[in-house]
Length: 333
Image (cartoon, rainbow, N blue to C red):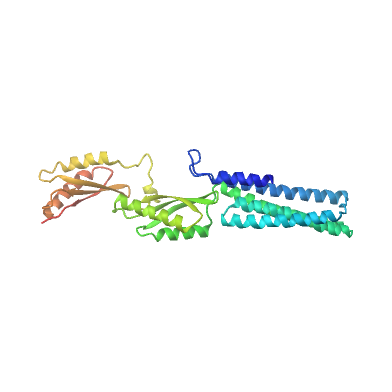
């Protein structure tokens, strides 16, 4: 009963909404509860095994019981099995390892009572050794169950990822989203009965920021809807495969941001005496350099003028370490 109240308290805590101190929710409380129940099961098994071995060493015989013990044992077995069946169904329905572990705790009580009943029957006919043998087998069985819960929960506490087959399914689902060119650095970790993911998806470098954001939002939406165990997904949108060492950003090779670049670009453009006003400047950070797109306000411009201005700006900006190329966009006669 104490463990049942413990499960109720832990379940209530683990289902509380995220707060400032627990922004990812309280699912790990359920994991800790499962660790404790697994330890209790192993302790129960150890105590039963120790008592049995002690009885074998000392040669102490079981007390031959009367009919009240048989009736009490049978009622106890049936009651505990009913509790087990109900708890295991609810635990599997809610995907709660804590409830499943508690269900097995109830069944372990039923099994140990079976040992009492069987041992009492054999003891009644003088076969005391069978009682001890059954107790050893049951203690090993209960200990194995407890170890499985304990081991799986500890793995979760150290941020173990989803299994490889599930990861393959997730990757396939990500690549089915229109606009996703490729993906990499998929990481997952269990958080209670749910999983938290983060992943890098590559999109075209020439789409708008809002389109790239929408593609990432669809990746998150599809994963959460398709996989029940996934609770949250963080998607980082890339415009190129940045796994290569050349694209790794550090304090030493970060490229300048717009204020610095725009000053240089407008200064270079201002050197052109016959050039119209710049309407927009688009910057594309690709391959460790910056591709510059210039949009002109005047649309009645000849092709040869655009080529001349491009050459002049390209020659001027090529002296900088960050420049990749320049493109000028405008209708021409």
